[in-house]
Image 1: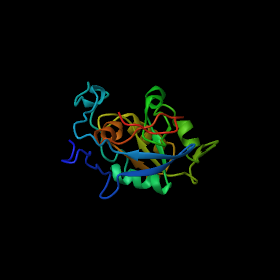
Image 2 (image 1 turned 90 degrees about the horizontal axis):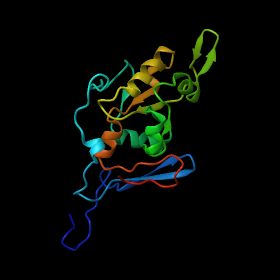
Image 3 (image 1 turned 45 degrees about the vertical axis):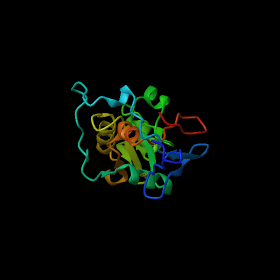
Image 4 (image 1 turned 90 degrees about the vertical axis):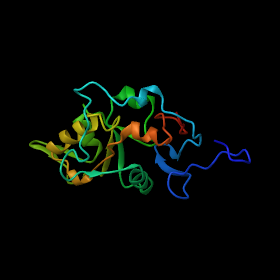
Length: 191
């Protein structure tokens, strides 16, 4: 809703922060919130119920030791550059749009995920002593893709304390009006 002077009110990510920059593969990516207070989620993301299984509410901590994140904690970690942000959804979902700067580590590709995050294949399993911190997400609180990936990774030896879990996923990100990104694009956009 416009202010009395005709301007659109400022919508912040956090107090005093209207935008932020996070690392992308080809340079910084800008995250903003949609300024339109009348904006609504598209029908794809506005559904509250999905058939079960597989769509059941996921635990905030899918494996003991995993660190849960909200939007602000995820953005802080992205800005600090100390985590790999990983979209655990199917490649075709990731290719459409994702959280800015995220890489795709599909829940079905445990070996690829482990290798991408610093683990080495040994004759008797995986050496994850050089594991990088990762923030995993998928579609939302009802989606089991990233929790499945997290369980498979920890069963293979990935340290749970190196995993952060953004359970709200794409649905929560979009609900907050935050920018998304199409991998390979130079700029973020809002939907």
